[in-house]
Image (cartoon, rainbow, N blue to C red):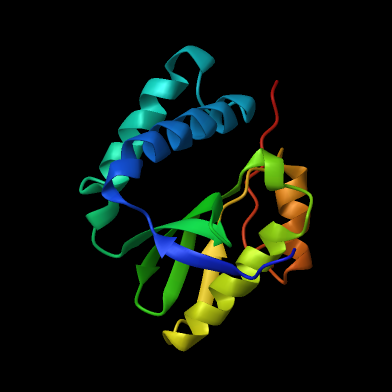
Length: 153
């Protein structure tokens, strides 16, 4: 990590690409977890994204940021604020920048910013099959507060 990370508000013009990429990733996660059928997952993911972000980057209490290192965008972050809680809907370090400690640095940056704004809790959801993400979240001090289990018979 040569330069410190910073968050910049996502430009309105970048939202469509962000929303589509987000939907594709979410559809894959839902299908991989066996929650949605693969053939309907992308449609459902797009609908969910539209429902959660009806006004795009201007949706109330939702913060869409580009993660910058120097002049380069290395990822995105979507956070929802409810009272004194941040909920991370999506955190993404682009593939070319992964495995360099930048996800942990981004979580540190978010925590620092949250404290400055009086936020007292940060929460998120992680798919169990995303072992790398779960490992990073645990390493960064996140605790498991709920477990959903399933058995196929």
